[in-house]
Length: 210
Ligand SMILES: [Ca+2]
Ligand SMILES: [Ca+2]
Image (cartoon, rainbow, N blue to C red; front, side):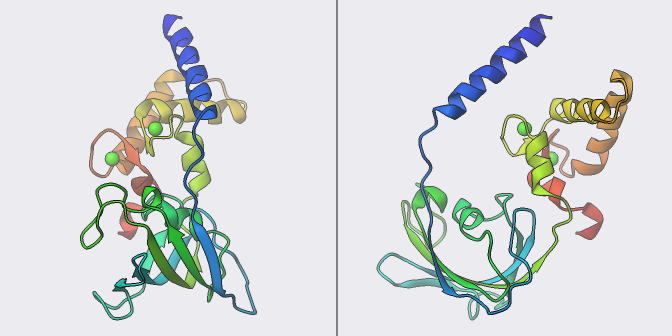
């Protein structure tokens, strides 16, 4: 009973904290090229194939995937923080063949630590060409729904809460022993690094596809 009251209290606290959050930094989006035909637009959970050029604010190029590294375009999943936040925000609703310029403030890029050649607190400009869009293996929406405290990983408790809700939604009575067993089974399969949490990455990729 006490626990229930506590968790109730916690969730109402969470709501009030969230409600009072400062507005997040924004990405400046400039569409450089939009193809004539657009069959689908990118959304969270999709796999995107991109080439990128990265520039500092003074216009110096930092990196281009067309000639640097392995010269390959890169696949990534949109919306699961596999890439910087500025990309997750700035590459939605994009057509295959489209090219965008994103001006990303440090808070949505590499922040106060920087990374490699990128010094701390850098505003970066990205020219991103989207070459292809595929369905991601699992939806971003279902992960977000399960991740009650928004820390981008699923705890055992969150999975149990989700199972209970799913049972109720389908008209079955809750069954704690069964939920416990199902949860253990899910963690045995999905928690690849065995840290007791299912990360958004572990959730999104099926392991036999790696
Ligand atoms: Ca969580
Ligand atoms: Ca894990």
